[in-house]
Amino acid sequence: MEKVGILVVSYGARAVAVVDAFTRSLNYDVEIYVADKQQNPFNVKKAVKHVVIPDLNVEEICKFAEANKDKIDFGVVGPEKPIINGVRDLVEKRTGIPMICPTKEYAIEASKVQQRLLFQEIVPEMNPRFKIFNPKDYKSLEEAKKAVYSWLDELENKAVVKPDKPAAGKGVGVWGDHFTTREQLFEHFMANFQYGLVIIEEKIEGEESSFQAFCDGKHLVPLPDTRDYKRAFDNDRGPNTGGMGSYKDVNEVLPFMTNADRTKEIEIINKIFERWKAADDEGIRGIPFYAAFIHTDKGPKILENNSRPGDPEIQNILPILKNDFVDICFKILKGNLTRIELEKAATVVTYKVPPNYGGYMDVFPNLVNKDEIGKPVDLTKAYELSRKYGEKIRVYPASMELRDGETYALKSRTVCTVGVGENIETARQISLEGMNAVKGGALWHRTDIASKQHIDKSMMHMEKLRCKR
Image (spheres, rainbow, N blue to C red):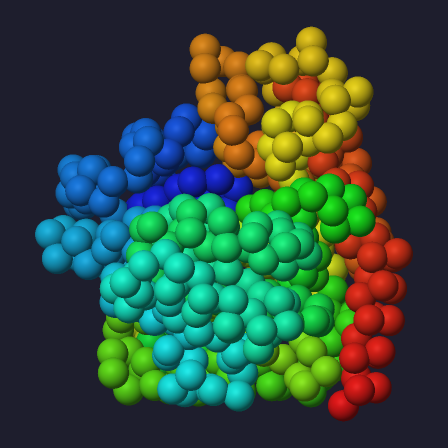
């Protein structure tokens, strides 16, 4: 059996799912070299070499790759920060190890302003209305405020405030969710404006889907649509989070989508892909398209695009690959990836998170077992469910750290379980059983990810919107 060495740049369950997919290879003797944000217990167990780089600094990642370059055939990057900071450019230049992720130039999430301008140039009909505010254009705070309020007049206050750069200021704010008055909106705006450019877009009514595609630079291979749950609490209440879970249906479309919706998504992404491919087909290999769409009464609109796999959305896909994931990666590197086969199954991902995540402990103090806070998290019972379900359940530690043989939850999403089934509800029940088997740490999870009630609500909403067309 051919030995293959693979570098995985890791943070969270997304990269754990990648490691899991590689180590389940039947065609190769795989050795994993992990550059990780922390001592993830899954990665520590699976890797032949594991290094912790807390800030995922690209120079340190490159040093780790360089020290093991004679044993590494290629690398894969999960989190966005190293991609934005040019990890592929640096590693390939210094070590010659081919990396599967876009180059820094195509890390499109680095600037929301550049994204919108790009979409306006290529697919203008898919953009929401937007306006860019540049601190250099205004002589005073009052002048900026007047411009913002004038734009809010046009949008009838229904606005979304976005900083240009990731992690600048207060992040994305949505009318009706994060603020309900102009004064609150402007306060949010200023918290971002002090750092640079800010976009204010119209808030669009609709249902969201996540689109992902593998790319070898020459070909685009779309993956099935998934639905992410960003809000912290059941019934889509609470603040936006990194994603509390997601689902994928048996087929490529989601229950509230039509085949025409799916075709339109692919058409939109292909227009961007053709532009990029013409400029630099080598620079876009990996998953250059992880796009958030919103389906409206006027068809799909594109909310944003990222140059990486989705978290949790890629966890819906990797456990049901029929192809060997190592073979997929070799085809990406050779430029001959034209199709991917998946099991005909639904998948549901649910995340368990710390007690203070999303402000849960403040909103539901009586539901938190305070004696468990800071205690180890036990995944033993969750892993034991594989005896019952086999490959139909996966347990992926995320923001967890191994200390003296015990695993502890950190500040972000702690662990996710993936249920695989012949329909969404079966997959959901398996995922929830996995969640309930995770013990300790005062962790909690949403109970309505992929619920029939939530899906029916989405379907009814879309039917109502289509009647307006």
